[in-house]
Image 1 (cartoon, rainbow, N blue to C red):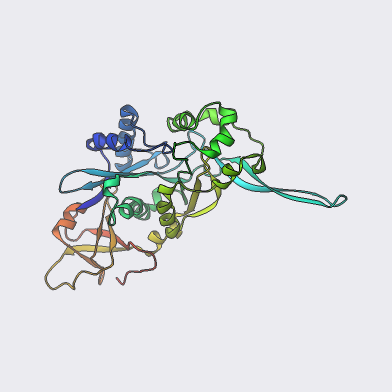
Image 2 (image 1 turned 135 degrees about the vertical axis):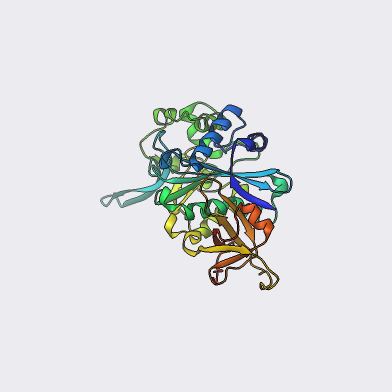
Length: 347
């Protein structure tokens, strides 16, 4: 059975293997053993409640319980920009008007912004291409939102996600080539690596703080502002369906879209219900055809699975395999929500 679970030190070799397969543009998952080991240690302390809430970094892995194979990783940072500044470009407009000569001009602009400071962030999403089937991708991504719904008091009001922007087949960014490269004097991958490695001060020191007119960019660069990488488009659609919206903020390196939303207004938060797990029996109704996302309510050992059980009268009938995957017993509480948009639970 495939389970989403909190990451621990045992998963480090598998996470390093996944990191080696990640393409350019994902700064939060690098094949650096020391950095990744430090992050996993932070994640373990986060799940155990040993860190202040705003310093927590919750890392999850997608694991096959039969083989122990790890085929995906995702994360939820409790707050960004509180230690290192968190930068985005905000799309805006400036109007230039002169009645005397009959000129009216409305120009699109980019403003360097720290608007997301203090927001929680969904990040580090990567699924092994060999495992991109069935409900694996949804479990890997949406399982974090189920965790957020269960532990909403540990998180700020707003959650965001920076989505990888459009890149050419050779890994270069037309937006970076047209804008950032002129100020940073380095290629896209080098700047991306520096940012992902924590060296954020160079952004403030080198990036212009005055509004940038998009008319001065190349046509190709303008066209990719707010456009997600082809491999990231499914993730964007999924997050938008869950209640995160694009509101004009983009990544400063590749102009990828940033989506955001209030945690309490997300579909999974509003529609999920608590139920009591009980053993499935021969008298239970046949399993439903609609998949549901089920998670335990344990911060220290969070786990989530996809099931076809349906809650009834405040309980949820789970097989022994499902209960083992969730590390729960009969009588333990679980949070459950339909996996698909537009379908609500009856229980």
